[in-house]
Image 1 (cartoon, rainbow, N blue to C red):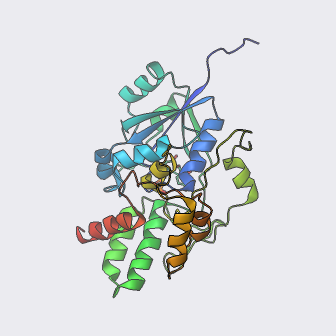
Image 2 (cartoon, helix red, strand yellow; image 1 turned 90 degrees about the vertical axis):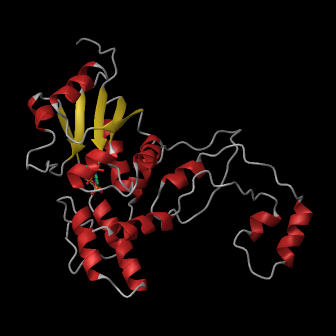
Image 3 (cartoon, helix red, strand yellow; image 1 turned 135 degrees about the vertical axis):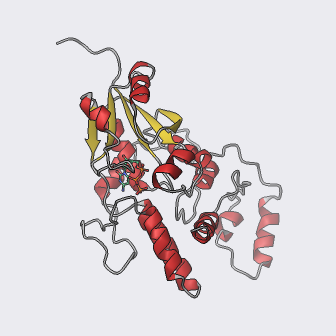
Length: 289
Ligand code: CTP
């Protein structure tokens, strides 16, 4: 047959709000359907119109999506529904061969399919949605901790749950919907999934290996920025000086060992977001409803 010179370019769009491994797995599967993956990140305005305000604003969502290794290009402020004009642009300006989405129904507020045009054009492909994780479920888990700590505002909980349940019933990995509200996910990453996510290559012989630890609970743009920070500063105090400080400390420092070995470096956080920032946004948001 005829040899194809041009790479196959695939397009996936989405909100990617509070990015989780379900989104990453969708991007991984989409990339596998072609040679180059272009991702459209839906604008804050379009998300607000179609499913309520996002927790993470566009600048953070762009950082998250852009950091994913299967993503080759990002289109910021993509429309929520692929209309005729945008589809034409995808085919003719971005040279897109296929438009990809998860196998969950994606309906517009008027009940029509957001991918109807792409399907009609015969340029639509599907990937398998990852069960056991969704933004709705993450919000539920957060509200559950907030509720456990405070007196418990059931009304706020249910209005936020509604706001974030964009037609998906949160389910556990075995497909069973949770009863009696959100619970901690029973999902355990299989070794197969871990192999799928890792690139399978070890570090090169001259690689400088940096170890960074953390809970990485609710992986957010602050994590992406800190992990991509290079050229951290050399320590100011030498090993012995630093060891003395550690030894003089009464409180045990979780980094005492690397500190005394002289291999601990502290870098300034490049982006001022923490998990509590995100939880605060959600709690602040519930007061608006
Ligand atoms: N997706 C997936 N598995 C999930 C969640 C999302 O495969 N658990 C896919 C969707 O099918 C879509 C892409 O990721 O192709 C982007 O999804 P997005 O627009 O961010 O929203 P939702 O499908 O609403 O995901 P969530 O409820 O987690 O926000």
